[in-house]
Image (cartoon, rainbow, N blue to C red; front, side, top):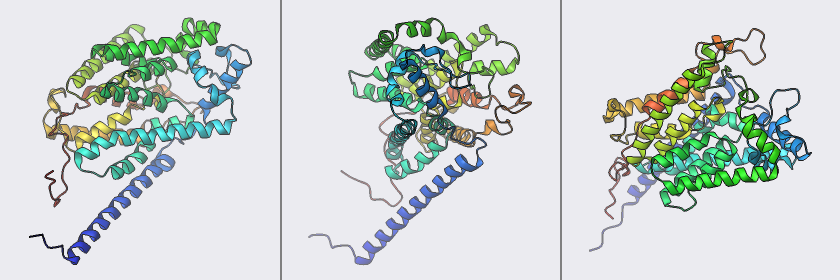
Length: 435
């Protein structure tokens, strides 16, 4: 006997409830987007756009170089800022120097913006699956939040490469999961452009992924060899001289410098920070981060492993500007996942292994990241640059960003990536799928 068809009123009621649910979700997306816009353009004390200043530096340096002049003697106008990347980066940036400034700005903004959307969607897709959220809804909520974070909007505003470098490293995470032979090439390219991603090679060695580490090393050496082949003298200048001149990048004591070296420089105004103390702090942070990353990999949560290494690299680098902190994006995704109910693994610090403690801590850390970096709290009360009497060392909260980074390295939970933990949560009233 075939089942009787559902009553028309029942079908109509289901459709109405589904439409109401979609309407509520669209309203939530609009509300989040509006709040993100207010944070970016209204509440934040720093205007998010900087007239693509770093892109001007890139293009100016490469065009200067194409005219046959030494790459590392370039300065943008009357500023002290010049090219600070290896010569291979100048080769990679060549297309942007061969087009008009407006075209380069649109291209850089489009590439970085699309990567932000793609990376955010990739990060939230597993969360949506685990917690029974529609993927479009999770991505639509997350994208404006990510765009409102200071590291992302500053990267877009300066015309910086940070999102591209983040994408290259995370591409290797995808390749490692799939067993791809090219896994490691993204880390190698990122390291050839900016040296700090080289810490991921150490992580690959610790986790015994020797092939990927070899691919990363070979890619870095090949890219560096291209730089030497194109500009031998410039490469020699960079690797023997320009690399060690931190003053070429900016002042160590600047509030924008969120690294451990920046913290020490602000603590000793007018003096050079103690190299010995800095090395000790870097050794402690790197040891803790790499140990925790190894534990995360052993627990099956390689995203947390990569994120811990990325955050530690930001702290260890002598100069880390606020727009370098793009590793906060995957960290925030992990925190939201645990706060929503994904249980912690035994690789999580002892005090946070209980589900309630893990959810509460993850929720508080996620809220801290959103408030601190969404509203740029460190900059409240800091006079604009070039203000007479500006004293960056006297700002009590000038180390706020570094404190948050250290807290994430110490407390970022590692998730229990088991089949039961990853099973989607059914909606209330939903009929279970018996297939």
